Image (cartoon, rainbow, N blue to C red; front, side):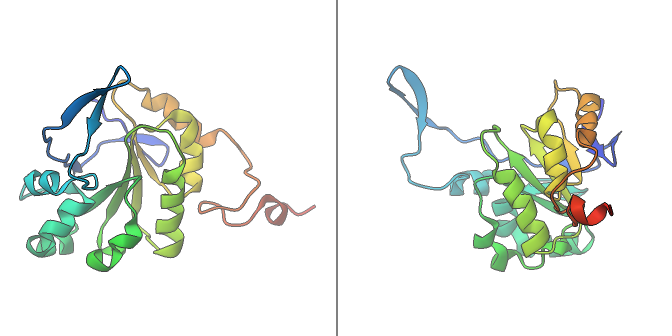
Length: 200
């Protein structure tokens, strides 16, 4: 299987296994001619049922959904110390709400942010927040519906690896990292703005 993981402007093998949330039955109804899933319980996504039913391996490097890690963190302490556990969160999940339960984010060698369907810029804000507010220093990965023309801006927001969806061209996505040669604003990757970097 060909890897779709981009790091350091190269396609590399991925030694992390992403643990997906358990699939649970959704209640489907018709509304205005469209099929929509109603969350009748009022629970947030992922639901408590999804979190409790999610299973994962007892060995190897695994990337766990944020709430699954929180549920099982006592049993995972030794694996966290061995750097075998990373976490992923969706763009609607607010890390602020969970930070006290998680502790030091730098205990994780990898944090990923999953974009279910790219419709807004929350992933950029999350990257900035993790780097600036929480001083996360390790690998920050964008996963899910990641598009080639957003990779450059993800890099500017603090991401340093990108898992491109199957069916998309990872080699083409790498080119997106160099879409702009001299960014004007300061950001995570290049702190000083162009007017400070370029002496005239």
